[in-house]
Amino acid sequence: MGVRYIGSKTRVAEQIMDLAGTASGGRFVDAFSGTGAVAGAAAARGWAVTVNDTLPSAVAMSVSNVIGEENVPFRALGGYPHVIQELNGEEGISGFIHSEYSPASAARGHVERMYFTEANATRLDAMRRVIARWTESGKLSWLEQQLLLSDLMQAANTVANISGTYGSFLKSWSASALKPVQLVARPLSPTKTDLQATTQDAFELETTPDDTVYLDPPYTKRQYGAYYHLLETLHAGDAPVVGGVTGLRPWQDRASVFCYKRKALGALTRLILGTKAQRILLSYSNEGHVKQDHLVNALSEAGKVTVHALQTIGRYRPNARASAAGGTVDEYVIEIEPVRLGSLQLTPTRAAVPV
Figure 1 (cartoon, rainbow, N blue to C red):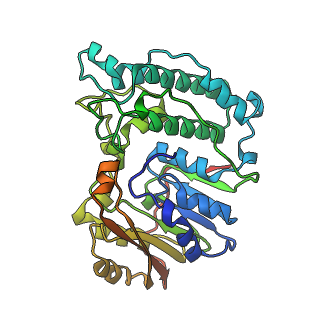
Figure 2 (cartoon, helix red, strand yellow):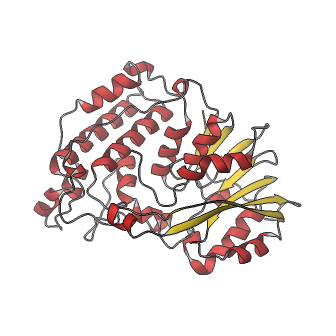
Figure 3 (spheres, rainbow, N blue to C red):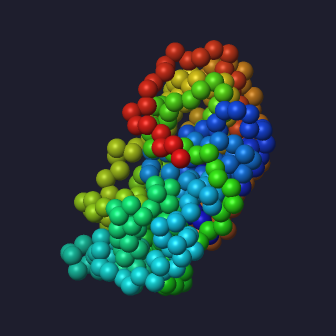
């Protein structure tokens, strides 16, 4: 099971790629890649792929959904399956996850945080430490490190005592939270993907006229940096100052302008006018801040606009009780073919990581 992620396009990724068409020289640029469901579908169809997200944890998950076996040989450590076996054999240690996100937090005078059992928290600390040690010693390439961190986050999510996001923990242990945490080697394609990965603001992402740009920005008030703060901590391997009942790490520097209702339409228009790409696909739904007709009218300033209805899917529900409450979301893609380049061209502050 992958990480449950708000707004995931797993169920409509193939339909989106049907609209993107055949790879034709440029790159498929996924500017808000999230877990990489659409980017992975693009790579499977032969596209050279660029994944980008402001959250490093999301970029790691995207990388793991795009790469092939040849991208991550793990030569220095005996291959991918052996590495997973080594990590699963680590004995637990008391580190940051244990001290702040298991019941051990109560001993530090904090709330008794029940994200993980103490046993699972110590194992997560131990495995994160080993990945850091391998990285520092040069035994892992950047892509290999990102794959292992993604595997670690997925394993953590499997035993996390949460209803869906890390905005809160459950007051009693779920059956899955009591199981021992285990990393699982994921299936990888046998080929090598032409991949670039960045952690830039989407407004700073550089594109070319040959590229196809896919945009799936946040379109509700939910800030991903806050909802997935614990995944960010696992990825970073740091020990930030955290507080409150949930142990929230500082996230405001990752706040998205697209999550604010009054700013979303202007931000989307500015983003699309600013790209050099001659083909843009924008995912949106009827749950978004901006009404479809308002969005289409605003984007018509950029060029020809076509609305493609995808399908009606179940609304994101974090647990079985919420799923039983029903509710659906109409997903659609707005295709923009610019007739002119936007006047706003920004230069990225951080370079892409070519691989």
